[in-house]
Image 1 (cartoon, one colour):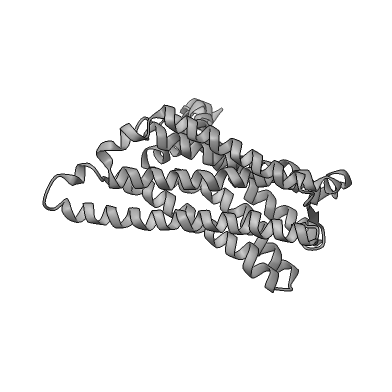
Image 2 (cartoon, rainbow, N blue to C red):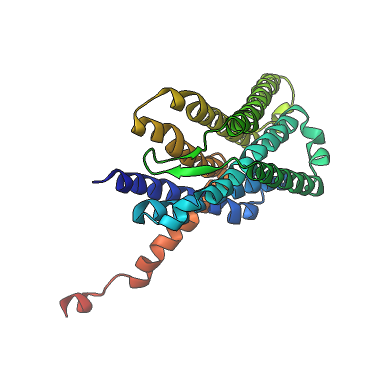
Length: 301
């Protein structure tokens, strides 16, 4: 079995799972009334970024690898920038979600006032425009990311300007954002722990309940995944020589975190999880219910 076929199969399964999870969150999270509109909108915007990345892998990168499509490989620079845009939207949404959870835990009484739906939509629009602008600047700089058939990963053309732009414009920027997200998450966990300890004395348990903790766990897990991916992609992978190790530290890790993002959003929200699995079970069991039990005369005939 050729290496291209192995890579294609791996990316096919990961992107299929990612497309299912992220488009499910994007399309159906709004149907869960228990999720605050602000948090739901931010989560859906994060899933939009993840969906762009996983959908591009499924419908563009996988066919390119499977069938060795020359025109796609020649224009893989454009493909990489579409995927980077999705990554940018997802990372910035993580930052907004971390701030959202901090406000919900630290100041639950003012949370609904501070995070109105109008303000949330404004933040999302500004964030997405910034993500698009930063990717266009990167594209205009002449720094090109292309698909390497030998290493099965997107690589930039080696030049001083491109190396510097990639290091400072991508790695350092995302690293700072992820560190800020992790620090906010740690402080949110600290505040939540204090409130839970006080719950034995007063009624603060009404402010921080299991639902809020589940959403806090969501942001923490997703932030940790992105920090691990950054370390794997930019720090560990350049120091290994085996091409399969580089593939799993870069392309595999990059695609996996976007797929996991959607599943974490589903799993950490009890009401949404129930909605998704109940509807999935109903759809799968519908054909069986139409058949129904057969009578004795039918069996004999």
